[in-house]
Length: 387
Image (cartoon, rainbow, N blue to C red; front, side):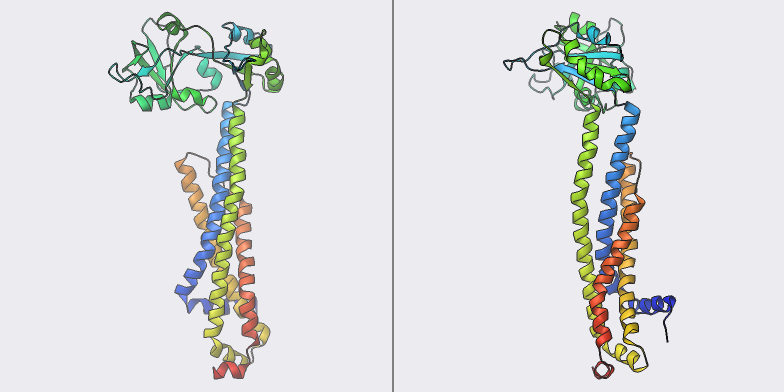
């Protein structure tokens, strides 16, 4: 008689139900491998989706200009007229700048030792800085134009100093009022560890030399490459070779590319775990054949053909692997969702990794159960019954 598909599933499932603990332990190896692969791909894809979201929100048309090195390797500086010169470029839509006040340090109080700077830079900032770099004030307000010395702190700088808006900090030998704290700036991470003051306060109070150290430029999206090509010569016509031009969004794109490359390595580790799980399934099925020789002999004596015995044990192996694969896919999906939620990322799990993971488990299960199934089918009814 021929066995229907449901009969094969029912017979295979009956063999698994008699050894639940062994089934769970064997399926665990498959589940770990699939969960690792799904979680790795899901987290990596979610990370790239977050980068794409950031680039869409922040724009890829921001360029930054900074001083490089002279021909002899000495530090150079941008002319004080550089921001105004850059603003004259036709496709440029906005320009702002910051200037490092090298002689100034910022401390929580005037009692802190001078050597404990925390790596916080003091920068003179243009009024339009935040709009140009797509930055935001997390708490408080941006720099005003009043006579009171004011400072806005980057997110990391505020954390290091342990201050909130309204408190005073000791900056360059003077007390400055903290008016605001910035949110992290993905396109200008150097602002996260900076104390920002107005250009006039830096010049009048701290003897700032007026040279900009970074010029942030927004250009029309269709003219970014053209603007980048003329920025150096425009910012410093006398020495364009001493000017460095960069595109901050490239750093985010490079991070996404690194995540993609690193995903390949982690996928390899997940594949190894999956193979180890397959070995566990094969071991379980071989032991099952040895333990059930009497059952096999009885079924053969009652008329079961070799092909039906082979199909029974192959079905058990496939069901065992599928059980681990489904559990692993669900676990990997949940890990991706939870991790993305904790990082405020969009949770993205490609359907191909779920489908590919399940197909991989069926392939592993088929290969793992092939030898035990063939071995069971070759048992002679008399030999099996006598054992």
